[in-house]
Amino acid sequence: MTFEVETLKVQKALRILLWGVGVVLVLTIGLAIWQYPEPYEFFGEHVSNLGGIQSETLLNNYNSSMIMIIGFGFFAAISFAMAIIYFVSKRIKFNITKGVLTLAIAGGAAGVAVPRDHSTLYQWHYVGAALFILGFAAYNFVCQARRYYRKHGFIPEKKNFNFWIDFIFVWIVLAAFVMYMVVFLLMHFTSYTNILSGPIAQKIVLIVDLIAVIIFDTNDM
Image 1 (cartoon, rainbow, N blue to C red):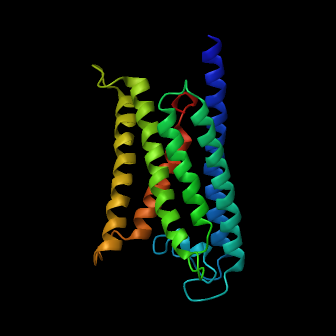
Image 2 (tube, rainbow, N blue to C red):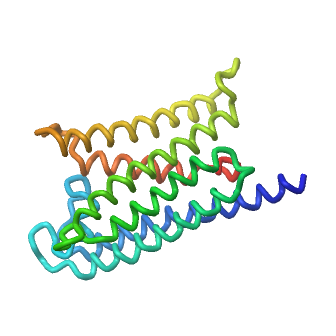
Image 3 (cartoon, one colour):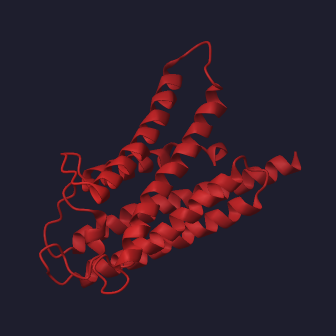
């Protein structure tokens, strides 16, 4: 019983940190858009544009860039703290997997904090952006799948409304993850010009992941 209580306390701490991740992400992007020196096309520009030294039309972007550096720096720190907790909490199921994924999120967030148009470090930004999006999506899928299995088992005999909501959302999270990975690879290694552009795919993944963060229970951590 003592071990169960201690595990629950750790999961509660992780739940608070994950909420913090969601709040920091929303505030950072929102404030960066507010300080962006030109109208920001939400589904036409990557989040990376908000952190550039210059905007899309080469205007000075100091304020928005600093917000992104500070915000994603906090994001990286929170995610790193979650990774450490996972690695040392052996009683949490899939703790190593979750630790690796939150560590990937932390490294990705640190990369996103580097301006995309930095003269020498820009490559770190693009690697970090891909790692951040894919790590965040993969982490949410693992937790969402765990949430589904904890509540319903593999395939329950009676499938009520809550079952279908949880079942469908697991596949939505997975589909968003796969979609972004496919679009990312096509855009970087082919002449892909489909309507489902990188910025659109990126925003879909972020919105789905933020919804997942909101609905997780303590036991899902």
